[in-house]
Length: 318
Image (cartoon, rainbow, N blue to C red; front, side, top):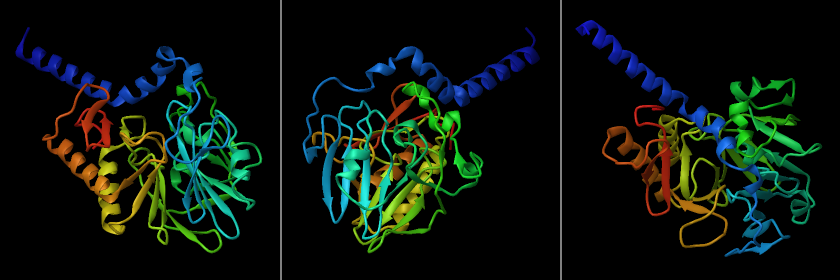
């Protein structure tokens, strides 16, 4: 083999490796139903919770005070939490849950105010709980507007990722488009919508300045962060962390969408701004090559004693 042929062969192998890494999130998503049974999404065992109460045999409710309720799904395999924030005039449900069970009776038992659902992002486990007739708000971005025909909204296949639970991509009416940075007035309390990309390009968080809370969705939570699914971007993850660290007070409590804190048991998952700083530092270490990870895809890095982050290959997604 000539030197030129060897160089061409090496270049082809390198390009094939890069292409495989780029497409790995999509291969992972599409292969999931072949390797896992969607029927196992709900545990047959009774839920055992550390805080709050069971509203029925599926949903857990934890009163966080000042009209804020965490609604958990302890029998769902991803241990999701949604947050109901009640104002004087209306309420906002941040994330609609997995749709494994209907959350609406639980919400109606907590407030008689009209409820708007605002998903933190478009993944199935946060969007599938939306039902016909629900009032839904969506972050107003070019990417989300592109998914709408007028106000009829249908997320893309790799935005929704319903193949993980064997779900069809839904469509629903959008009652309210909310720009990043906008204030949401619930009557007697306001929230600010923050764009927090990283986990997905459309991810948002809700900042409750009066309560010192940030509701983070899947941007940050205890256990392993998913920065390897379609649309995830490690560079955006770090830029979001650095922006939040600059903008938010250090005492802000972060309320997340997936349980659980290590050694705490099943309860509404929370983190602190120090955890956010640890995430920023870990992402910097990945970029610099100084933080060592385990595995290949996803490659798993330790952030601190509460969090890991799973990523694509270090040179992809920055």
